[in-house]
Image (tube, rainbow, N blue to C red; front, side, top):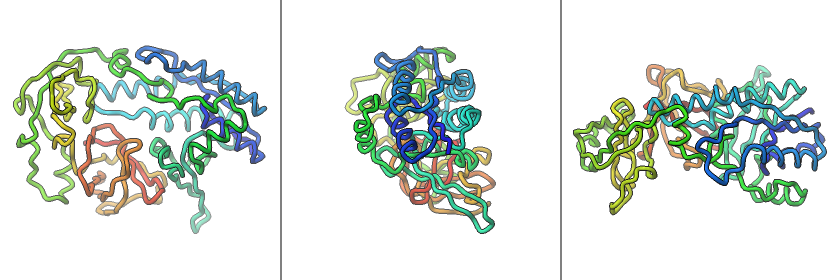
Length: 391
């Protein structure tokens, strides 16, 4: 089989390429450059050209064909511009999820197919399971990686059956230490290279500086809301998913001004750093933002009630089922385990379809639910679906 591997210059994709060659596949390495601008990038973050050098060294060591492609125009259009638009609207985007859906398994996939690929492989820590239904149609289940500390299935939560039909995840059954060991045994240049961090293909950034490429700084006020505020009292039963999915409607009259900020669109619910307000017994956390009035609302302490909610809502257009065969019907209720951010432990919840919208009612209140985040739901280790949180 002819397999194109997305060689990123990291150890995971390097070992993925090695394993595929050991299995007898015709392996081709393809490095993609997705970002040129260094605005907001923190010092010490490896530039893209170092990544390409390491990718080439790995390809040479494995004696596989190597290609390079510049996808920066599509990346800016499909991922970075989306980030700017979401933050400007007061939402909290996840560019890594979009990067996989729009770039790695779309634009990059098309480049791989031009090279004659039968499959495309990446170094993601997740697994793929193929099965056939009673009519002989193939289905693909996306499963969590065997290394639960590195499981990256959440980042692939928006992939479709067609995209998964081309995918291979060669290291999904391995633990990270095993991947490092294989790389060292095979003397791959990436064996001891640190894992990349920050925004997909951009790296670690000073987010406000990065966003100021398009979003202007604008001074506004920070208002503190005390934990006993009546805004946090809901006159609703625990199972009233509609009532609990409504965010707290905070106003400046509910608290007092305690500082200023440079733009409400630079903050997200649950954020602690960047407020620049000290002298407190406990840390201050963002519990709400208003980008129209340019106000940031904060509360003191990790247990502040403004940080927690029991339910969220996903609009019908934003509901995604990895396999449409699992789609829920109007009025249906199912139990799943859910996460709203990468590496969050799975949380028990009930999913309800009501007037086309999807409500997720958690067994326990969840911290830091923010518009724009992706919620992903699982049945065991199978990622069943996902959606963008509307409220």
